[in-house]
Image 1 (spheres, rainbow, N blue to C red):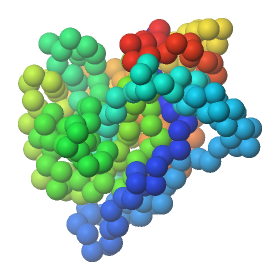
Image 2 (cartoon, helix red, strand yellow; image 1 turned 120 degrees about the vertical axis):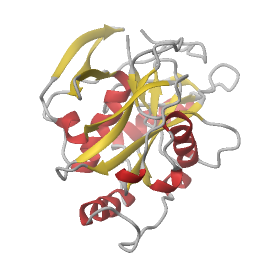
Image 3 (spheres, one colour; image 1 turned 90 degrees about the vertical axis):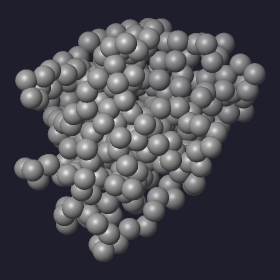
Length: 280
């Protein structure tokens, strides 16, 4: 089952209007200040000439060209508002500095009572409300509702390229920096969240505690990555959409690619893709 698809659509300029911060802001350390400055200027990679030509061809046929898999793959989805209008969502990649000086990210384990993805590890976030002014607000609002994270504690610095979930939900990863970890007292919403924990961000570009499964769809082979993590005598499995976003986030933060082959697919979604389409 394909667990994620990442769009190659260019982000609108409004997505990159992250707040401007200075050293006088309440960052927890000089490392966080430097990270914030680095991420503020992050831009998604430019399309190659061949990719631009392919996109022009696809768009002329009334399609959008998203990125499928974890990295540089492409697919086509019919751009028909009556047949395919992906709902928008945002997740918060909330980074803070751990006691050992490493960058860590806040994660949740979904409630086992939920009807979908029950018990799975995910990033705080959810679908956009009409009242949300942007993806930043969606991600921080959902984080407050799910785990009690006050938006005033988070400095939002940038967004990553959109992803598409297996249900073709467009998910925008929003990167924020938690400047004062001690001020955050997790209060998980029991209807949605079973546990709140954090993990070292760098683990998602290391070839440790990782395993893969090879899958095939429409003649294209690709890999799904699974990360095993243990903390406080509790074991967590991080995979799929969440793992894909964190691989990308870690690559951007540490400015280096993962130490393993991602093997992303290049394939075409069926022409009749719609809001009810589920990739498997």
